[in-house]
Image (cartoon, rainbow, N blue to C red; front, side, top):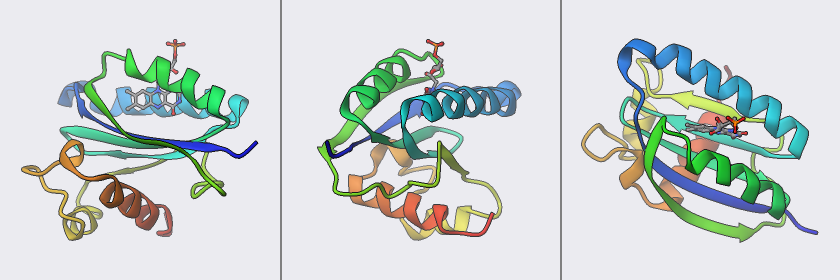
Amino acid sequence: MSPIRLVYASKSRLVDANRRTELDSILSSARRFNDQNGITGFLLATDGAFAQVLEGPRESVAQTYGRIVVDPRHAELRVLVEEPIAARSFAGWTMGIAERDETTSFIFGLYGVTPEADLHAQPLETLVDLAGELAGRPA
Ligand SMILES: Cc1cc2nc3c(=O)[nH]c(=O)nc-3n(C[C@H](O)[C@H](O)[C@H](O)COP(=O)(O)O)c2cc1C
């Protein structure tokens, strides 16, 4: 059965003081869980928003999204697509991440992602292309 991908965007509820710890905790539980469930994908994070690509078997993606959607560390989730795919785009990542910081803000800006037009306001293509570009950079 072919995998599906689900892409959503949300507004971050992380506060500056705990941001690093919370992001680390999100990533470590995401990677552990995703590894067990055949999920791959990529997470984009700015101060104000998230966008995430989840790829995997339909049932695993649905269960994972079901837990993510009730996580109080973000809000106003908007699913942009949920569709079968011929092949994964982030096969090597149990969950990759790119944060907007000094080194990446230029690339985020090239895709029109600014504090005024943050991730949650972007169309599907922009988010997937930006994630793909950032996933392809040397770490
Ligand atoms: C932005 C964001 C992305 C997340 N991505 C994943 C993910 O890819 N996989 C996953 O299992 N959990 C992810 N989580 C964490 C889940 O919401 C949840 O905390 C975790 O799966 C543990 O679930 P549990 O508390 O029910 O055990 C994410 C949370 C946030 C806020």
